[in-house]
Length: 304
Length: 286
Image (tube, rainbow over all chains, first blue to last red; front, side, top):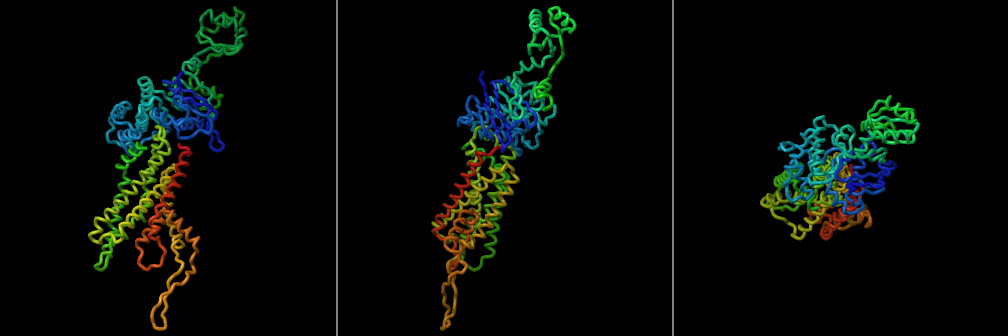
């Protein structure tokens, strides 16, 4: 698998505080990677490291296979764009002037696709209105437009929907999906809004105390979050045999525990299994959302 | 770096702070001219020497204001992050901002000199000093501007808060002024001073007496070196040198020192910029 970004035992220490601790992360090309963690978990610090705003204390990261210690990393950064916390825009300039400045800084030969980018983010008709008079959503979209200036194929968005109204959230979500599908842009998005993130992300990374707890693909997570019967049985072999015969989807968790991803009457199931000398000792019906999955993963007493 | 400079200069054209300082500079030049013309007595034209170099007293505060606000906005708007994120090295970002400040400083000085020259020459007369001396003064002034710009660029890029950096830069100018004033009496002290007495024939005779307050050669040279390294100090020495009256017994900058004074500013610039770039490279940006 081709990775756009990989981190290897990344570490960032401020005095005696480890903000990032032995962190390994993998972002595959074309994915929308949702970075999830509570406040102070290290999401923004990680993004700052990746964007070159801060230097790691230990460990390395690679972008398009180029390690951060290589001088070529500066060239590779031209292929990425980012918004960290708040969009980096000149408040006393118009949307067009902001974009033009970015074009100049990037050394782009002409402003040819400037209008196209403004149209893409829905800021075509802002005219001479200065960015300081924009709504939060418009500022966020202008930030994305600036990040798109060099036709990047990797975009990093830190809390892109923070403070946005429902309409603004939908606009940003649709824009991200459009850019991912139409332009093949890979995204790294950190967000507190897990439900919103679950609508767009294709991969997830759960971060806690600066450490990556788990990386999981959407399909895998959906499978884990699917409505299921969690069974504790006396004879796991017979139970598996029965599910195989019936072609029910299942997952063996331990010698006693098995998940059944098939809706059926519990009495019928108990009778069928007892005929096979298998007794159900305990059962529970479960359906998880990304939020509950996250809370369970973090031990149940943490919140986003 | 060319890309960064291009972006900076395009931004400069629309920058209100820059144009505001340009207008203030023109007003200062006009006021100084008017004041000199009104106070001018006698028929002999005294020339524009003194007032032509006078702006170097003010330029520090203007470069401090411009640099802290222009570069500081990069922090407050977050556009500095953009530059790093799109692959510009921190060294280039630092140098591009330094060059922008230097260019603005030189522009302000040129605007002032232009106003003084155009209006001053017909009314007050031409330069009285030699062309060689004038060229060395210009060279020194340019390097003083470079030293100022290097100090304020360093402060602004190492301090992420625009308000703190602006206040720090302005306070720094005042501190440098106070330090220069404190050092100047030591640096300019003469070994002897002149005394007069009336001899038996009723004639006035001049004799030199050792100055009891003379700090000694080592102390004087140290004070002088520090004074020349501080832009405000060197600026006051240049203005005093140009305004110096004949037979005045104060050891201001000599003509030979005038020729090498820019080297002190160059030293200040190299040291401050070296430290600034090193610290900026290490700085954790948010």
